[in-house]
Image (cartoon, rainbow, N blue to C red; front, side, top):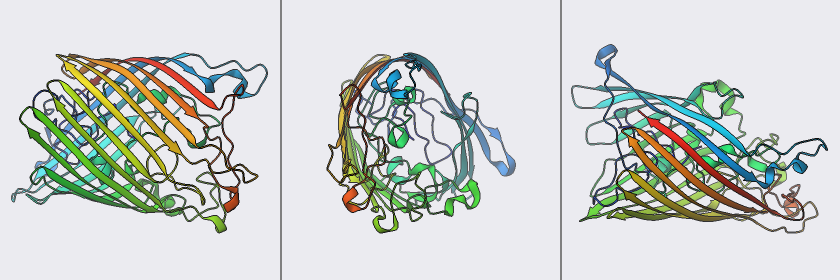
Length: 444
């Protein structure tokens, strides 16, 4: 899942890597928009030197390494929740590592056409020892001169690549790094947030197209037959994920004197899973097959004189953590969230603040009696100090109030579902999370 803190990979192999991925948004105070896909990182490192590959292709390396520590207070960490009388509450502090290593392979034909591939290795919440590495993205591209970019393989959906989100600094945001310190054992969907950007297409194997920019506008569209990654062989055809996913978006970026502005509108549409016997995906029967998925997303940012301000809004027939990734059971209403953010840049320091809310339908209990919706509120303050080229230090505080968090897949018993159970502890149905973080990030 894509975090606000991370810079996204451009869909051409020659894309520049961000050295300031903490400070997202239009480049405040310069009247120009920052380069980069979607998040609009404010600082950009020079391209890494390349080595010669076969057939005249060039090969470059890039990526990032990140280390952070946190103090966590989470109602979900209490000993009572884990059941056993002798169980201790979870520790209130922890460290984490994260890394990505990207290989850019670029070529240019005699007629000016660019082509190549991007391979992205990651070690992000993979394996108990933190040393397991897998492919996050792995795709090829062809870019005929003046026509746009055609890409194919494991890469983000078109709407995710063109996304404009609320600006933030450091580990802030609806789905920022704070969630990686949170335990979700026993909670539904494996993630404590619902205010994410439009989904990244699960990095499923897909085909897509991104247009050139015309008078400030560009657009994109992508298609994935299912939500899995093609190197898994035939497993992706088991029909236990959403199918026939189409993603599309249009974006505008422009400058007006000292003011930079960007905005986008996008959406995705997919068929619900067909293999309903896989209860790990959702609960249901043939009689109450889940609803087809749709999600709509709008975002905008404006920046000038060191300040940046913007927001985002998502709504659609989807559930769970990531906008558009999970089909709703029958009888459940649409989900939505909004997020606003602001940053101020003072020399090498970027200050930021975010606030957002979201809501998802919990359906009924097993007796068919309606229960309260999940209501999620997040806010945070943070700062980033760009210590040296490619090197940033950050601090952040995030507060999350999560009311009526589902423990089982939300469903409506009046439509044949099993009903929903929700979080409750010491008479309270609100899960409160407070998390303070500090970290260092090296982008290269």
